[in-house]
Length: 237
Image (cartoon, rainbow, N blue to C red; front, top):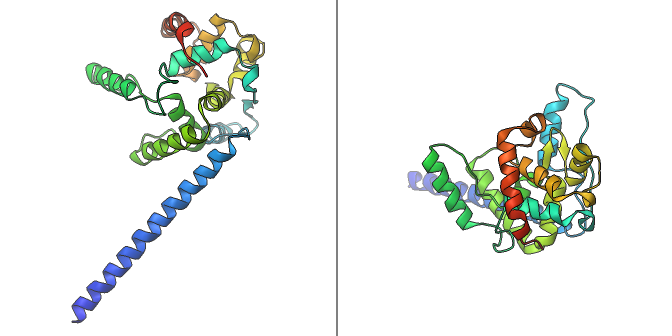
């Protein structure tokens, strides 16, 4: 009798803990949804990736600051949008946040090369990660990234998602957004970018800090040529 009573007490505590965990999970998702909802009309002043990188660099040099400013969608050259879509997410206008074909292609490439050589993340997934999460590759992070991606696609739409991505993407050490990148590399606003300049910036996205220090690398030149060959066919909102 006493044993059964103790067992019943254990199960009651177990279910209380489960419900508390479920409640905590729902509260976290509610917070993320509220943040995404605000992005319909509000522009982010910083992101999780920016804060993490800034803290890391400031631990060595407390005086450094982010180079970042917002550029309105209408003030970004269409060639820049086409180049970034060609570089990062060819099927951006066809999918609803997840490019299953791209994931399959990336998996096959990684298996063939025996290493992590390609990713299948869409622009929407990258935006979810940059805005709210961390660069680690844990299972929890991937799951949360997927949930936030669904929120972004449901609430914001393609035009806003692309504008946000272009404004928070990393283009060098503590260098974020198409506006700062255009000024840093070409001394001009994002609205004045030429097709070749747009292709250069888009080609940097997979490894911006490396390409910032190695702008003449063969890998970067190869990516630029590939993007220039595809960007005219890129569909943008």
